[in-house]
Image 1 (cartoon, rainbow over the protein chains, first blue to last red):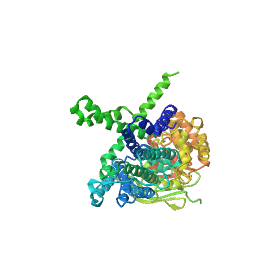
Image 2: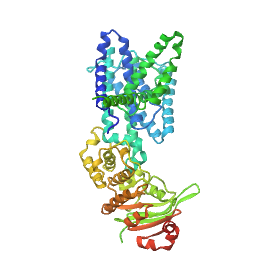
Image 3: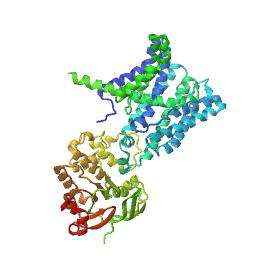
Image 4: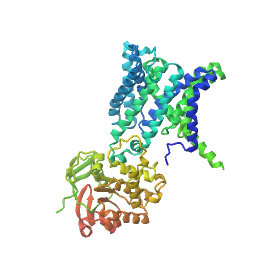
Length: 331
Length: 250
């Protein structure tokens, strides 16, 4: 009935996954693998960004090739105040929300007047505009980027200092994002967004001004992605315009499609697979033959193509197929 | 004399060199079923599209309920009480039958900037949705996916959705298209019961349906209305027989 919700079995799996993510720092600490916590932190930040893209792309059918711009905006909303030794986290947070919402409103108002390829092109154009703006800002490092020496400070609240504390900030943001998207999609608002993906003309003749609803959805998505950028800036401690290049936007699309576009947990799965492969495929290639290391993109691309071709509905789709198959053969 | 609910005046629309709507004047009186017939390519669907707002006319005026709606968008017209069903079935296939109708109820029930409560549990929308499904004879299958319905049932749902908008004027674009005899008969009974509920502008190829349902008939040929009259008079009209009925009822 509600195809985007995991069926009960996989629902349980996703709950387990979230529990595992919640205790991951302890496991890594026990296993003495601080690097894995780093990798996971980065993965979850990207998962937040991919989930925000899934909201407009997977549920709403708006394929944006400029979503990484919001990551950059969020990161610079931490970086630029930090450049002036201004580390108040509430200020960073407020600035991120205001700037990414404004940019989403502007870019969305223009791009949502178009559809399909034109929409993709205009979102791309807007993100490139932002990209080159930051490249030309010599004061903030231009092409070379900016180092953030201290993380956002939330006095009398929760600290972001230390890898574990930051991890829980990221994890909490991810949980909130998933919950928000879930509620949004099933609320009256979400029905309009999902409906417009399938048949916009029909929805308009039912009395919905689809343009406005989509614009609001685009702004919500942009703000969430901006928050991911704010976390990423804090996490890496170094930001540069490269974070918002269109290649990053393309990777976000891949993460969503790989995991299962239009499924709540799809982007989380896709990001996990993406980050894992990006990290360990080169090592695997090196293991096979040291001279192959440089060519790890080749099998990486091949895997992506295969997944898109044969794994309809991405990883989530394959898992639910497996789920229904075991249930059929089971007692 | 009663004021017409819909008044079309001097409506023109052409695509390149093809004139699809040629100075159409048409008055639809409230409370009746007004059918528009005409051979293929006469511009019937183009006319509906202009009334519903999907197409902008080149010239002319459309007045609805005493208000000039020529420049209003489709959603605005729908809010004012203009509902449309499509010639090509366009229900939301991945949603359930009930979800489809509830979406239609939602469309005219104020704004949908409601972000938190699940829509499918909204008791008012549920009740209303079920009521319309009952009327369309689809209530027992409410929880099935629209994709699982037969073609005839999808057409029925299409009309139920338009009805769920509580329209003042219902534009039906060939509701019987592609239906078998039995399905058509059921649709005719369904539409006949709507007479008290709303005014209907019916575009239809099925002559039996038109003669059973319609109070008034307009004949559209090459984009212009050549006659508007009662069903009996149209049947007796020579020009009409020549232009249209002759071809099929010879």
